[in-house]
Image 1 (cartoon, rainbow, N blue to C red):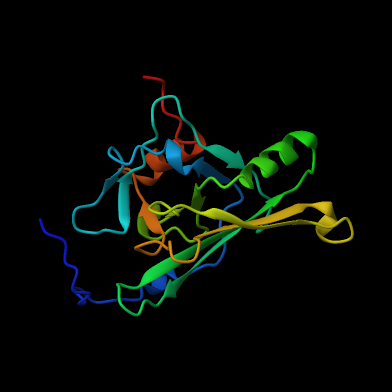
Image 2: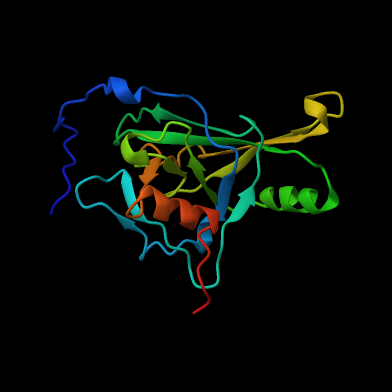
Length: 199
């Protein structure tokens, strides 16, 4: 089935008052090295290009847990207008490393080496039957470390950082929804950090 690239609306945009919006994301987040994603086996719904039905990692690869508290971690996205090309979207993930231990600082230092990452988050608002709970940021172009700060007199000495789409390399869609069959199955994959057994 060919993809409609015209940008025309194809359905009503409705408000479900029994499922009103709620802000925030759940505490835990999974960060994945973009190079560890099997892009061939990762599948998108044939009728909805913002719905991923399987997030597949390469054999022996796993995501990594960034644990949070309350609303310490967050996500955002915004439209980026293009003059001579289709518009794109900038994805941003803001994270907190609570304990500035040597082990955590080693991982934080690794983030600064120029690799690209993907963030999978679970929204507090989950939609009907929790089918909209999970979102993927940076799936196509990846997120890069943009800021990282630590100040002993601010934020209880925690390390604050931000991963974002880099200018000129934004995403082709807003963050994609991830639903692998059901909420329960997707939650299990998330909890298992999308670990893929070695081939």
